[in-house]
Length: 143
Length: 125
Image 1: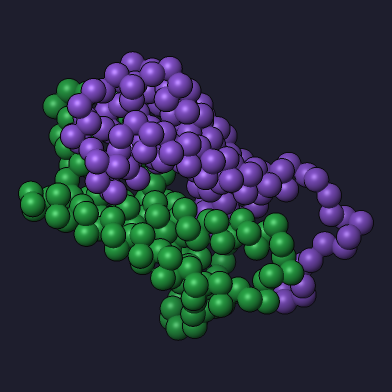
Image 2: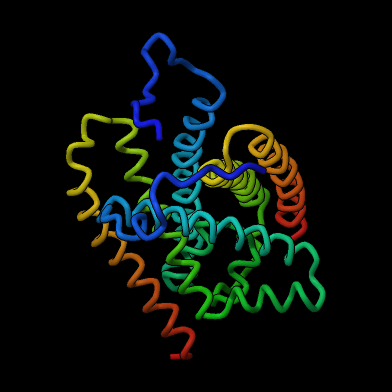
């Protein structure tokens, strides 16, 4: 068993693709906090304080699509189905899906050694990501 | 696919006392994995509709399932914020355990309130 530390020397470090993905995981998380906050504030402006409960507001904030308020006491669904919310929802779908696909690859890397296996996981991840983004955007815009 | 060999036996691994940070690592991973599966199936069931799609979405709207998925999402969101903060200011890492202690009451307050609301709505009161 090799127990030597495997830390790279400073000269060997740099902005490689894996590093950019690591950075993307953090930045996409921050972007999602912003989008969730927009959903939260928007819901309160549209009357969520008296017409929805806490869990329904959170569900809307995590994914602002009109189907998520159908079961609440909101009297008028039209303000919740505007183009603005479809754009916010689309952004969340794409950012969250990419964040999640990257996360799945990270988990898989913990169990699969370097080589062909990892390449298969990466290709499968990208294919699944594109497919789920297309389907997700279709669902958001036709909801 | 070549699997990596274990450096320690499974029983040793299970006895590893990682404590607070290890627990958040595990829950973050379980929550992320759970969300990936849930959101993918939810999008597909919304896309397909039909008997299966409506059944799955109905299951997702049930209060039992909401309690589970809210745990996954809210823990991942709050723990992820802590991770992002430590990554932006690595010098704070010496206080990681204290931050995790602080994280639990924040999570429990938000999640506990959400569960209370979900259960009360589920029981129709």
